[in-house]
Amino acid sequence: MKNVIKAGLVLCMATLNSYAQQTPAVSPSYDFTLADCIQYAYLHQDTIVNARLDVKSAEYKVKETTGIGLPQINGSASFLDYVKIPTTLIPGEFIGAPGTYIPLKFGVKYQSNLGLDASQILFDGSYLVGLKASKTYKELSQRNVTRSLIEANVQVTKAYYQVLVSGESIKLLDANIKQIREQYDQTTAQNKQGFVEKIDVDRVSVQLNDLVTTRANTLRLLILNIQMLKFQMGMPIETQLTLRDKLEDVKLDETETESILVATDTAAYHKRVEYSLYETQLKLNKLDLQRQKSQFLPTLSAVANYTSSYQNNGFSTLYNSQFPSSYIGLNLKVPIFNGFQRTNQVKQAKISVQKTQNDMDNLKNALNLQTSAARIGYINGLQTLNNQKHNREVAEEVLRVSRIKYQQGVGSSIEVTQAETSLVTADNSYIQGLYNALISKVDLDRAYGKIQ
Image 1 (cartoon, rainbow, N blue to C red):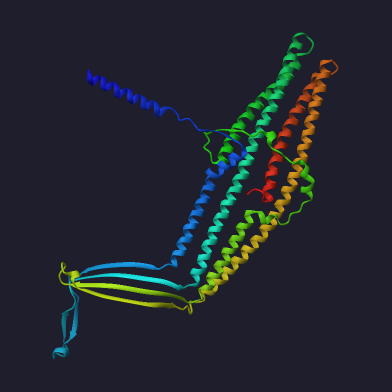
Image 2 (cartoon, rainbow, N blue to C red):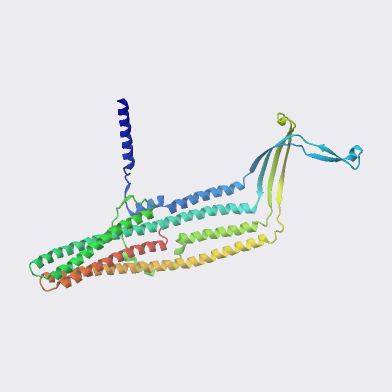
């Protein structure tokens, strides 16, 4: 009986464990503003995480290069067992037997050496330049982090706006569906009373079905846009995310249009991280040129050695006899001729500097062009958005008047349907214009180096 009870308890525990393993874990949920999404991306996006790891690696590279100039100490140890002691031939003249050689064995069976070597750089032009280059390399990796942060900011902001605009599109579709459904119910009732024809009901029904289908498609795109936002943030797709900001919270300063149109900031490229990256790369190339030139200079280092030798025919008494030796000195290396290799390396380094300078000039023009394009794009976006707002207001008024005329019997259902179609088209244009204006503002801030 006890065994049955134990078996039952074991079975119950196994069942509970299995159920616990099969129960899905609850995904974390976040309610984020745009600023929250950007900060989350700064901490979790893989590109940024890797860029920060590159900075860590660069810090270790600086320490590695610095270590070259510190004293270098190495220990050595050896043990030899002469299974057969080497034989040396001695001329027979030494014992009065000219023309012959006498084989003699010199040495002991066991030999061991313990040594310590030390060196210290006193002067090496390549090391001094390399130390500067390693610190500049760290600076380059830090600027890469800044570029990754800016890129994440831009991508997350655009994805966030895309979600807000998709939500606004659904709101407009819901309003249009509500109006057309009311018209459908009204037209159906009028058809039953014999006031309108069946074709009028069908016409409204087709329009209603189109809007319902469009809403379903837009809703699926909204879900996809939220997933895209989470991807840009470095957030797992299955995580629950809701957006706290509303579209009306996003401000587009339409009063600055004229000032932007007049503005011609030809020095904006200095604020761009892309240009500063090239400046750092140019600095690295110039340091490499200095390093190549330093190959013509001599190098000087201090050296020291201490060695303790042990020899004996018996293994147990090997370390009873010690024969130490040591020395200190200087090692001077003067380059004289190496087949013009150093000369050609210097010329190659000069070409690299020239190429980087040319790339910087080209980038400067490209960034200035990008600034002009972003400025014009933002102005066009604002003007287009204002035009679409006006068109939407006009379409709403036309629909209102068409319905009044239809209800009073002086208008046709076709006129109402056309007005409703025009309103839907105006809504779509407004949504697209709103998104373009928001995105053009992000591009403008980036072009002027305002996103850091």
